[in-house]
Image (cartoon, rainbow, N blue to C red; front, side, top):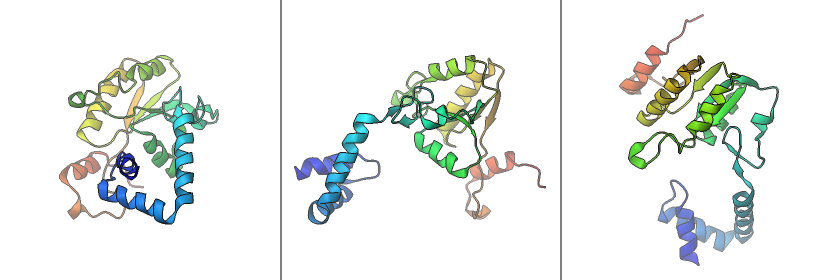
Amino acid sequence: MIESLNKAFCALPGVGSKTAQRFVYHLLERNRDGGMELAKALENAMEHVKHCSSCRTLSEKDICNICANEVRDSSQLCVVETPTDIHAIEQSGIYKGKYFVLSGYLSPIDGIGAAELGMDDLEKKLQDKNINEIILATNATVEGEVTAHYISNMAKQFDIQITRIAHGIPIGGELEYADINTIAHALSGRKNYD
């Protein structure tokens, strides 16, 4: 039983066998109530959390709270790689539009193509004529850029404004420690200084 619990914890990203072992022994030796609560919460989530039928984020309902919110701007669609990206954007409090979650990025080597990312669903959304702007918020990786380029080409046929989130030097960052690509993105994405 202990070994199977170790293997179960190793299924989490960034958790190796030593960390999994620490988790298991902590729960068994010091926090059995917490372990039971964790087990119930996991079982409940696995049974009830699914993908929103509109944006594909994780939700307990068929339509997530963001998609169901009629106050949000339906003319803007921000395309992200993961549900955690939505959480990060929402914490900024700036964006008031809707989302589309790819659940990954294009990677033919890994067998992840347009079908696996729901590009057909995204194309249907763009055909509805309700969207005026698509914001590409994929990561600044090679795969993220390829995915953004693919979506941009798809969106061009619908006469929709296509924008890309800016990438550059983080607040508190120093130029001497930034890599060349980050500096290039920061320079090309510069804005007027008021």
